[in-house]
Amino acid sequence: MGLSIRPIPILTDNYAWFLRDEESGATALVDPAEEAPLVAAIEAEGGRLDQIFLTHHHADHVVATDALRKRFGAIVTGAAADAYRLPMLDYAVSDGDTVALGDMIGTVMETPGHTRGHIAYYFAAAPALFCGDTLFSLGCGRLFEGSAEEMFHALHRIAALPDSTLVCCGHEYTLANTRFALAVDPDNAALHARVAEINTLRAEARPTVPVRLGLEKQTNPFLRAPDVATFARLRREKDVFR
Image (cartoon, rainbow, N blue to C red):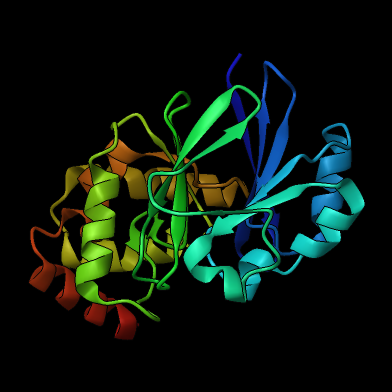
């Protein structure tokens, strides 16, 4: 028993995450943004959708919310700070609030940087973190609305979670991220091993996430940045890296 987690590929390179509390059977989706493949996945999983968890307001994370709510009767949770630009929320949550999926309890973490109102959901019993576009495998989100300082602190708050935490992010960017990571950290043996694994996974059309947070702390240049200034420099370099 526990929390079953399945990434569902949608759009070009997004993931929505299908969750099931194995004890109660309650189900949820994180960041639904394409109706047809998500309906098919839900039907394949038994046709039940109880909840939708939103991490931030960007269309590629929310656009199918209302259609799925109408079809399955799911309730929708998202950031109170962003309620004005999210689909209608049944539950508006803030930092430290809890959400329940059956017997599984998640904690809301405010993680601004990519957007001002970005949140993540941490289920300690799994343990698993649904972090949208804050943290990617070997990368992090662009600073569209927040500052480097906000993102640095959000990432290092995430880094304080247990190393066994599954990082469930919003995009399959990992292979593309390997080039920059190797360019700025070429002597990292753990990174080279991770790159080899990523190449194998993508050659087989398999997801590179979820990934354990402990491995990200060894290999992700943004999590390894020791201070805000270093992080800001890396983020600027990544923005123009080709």
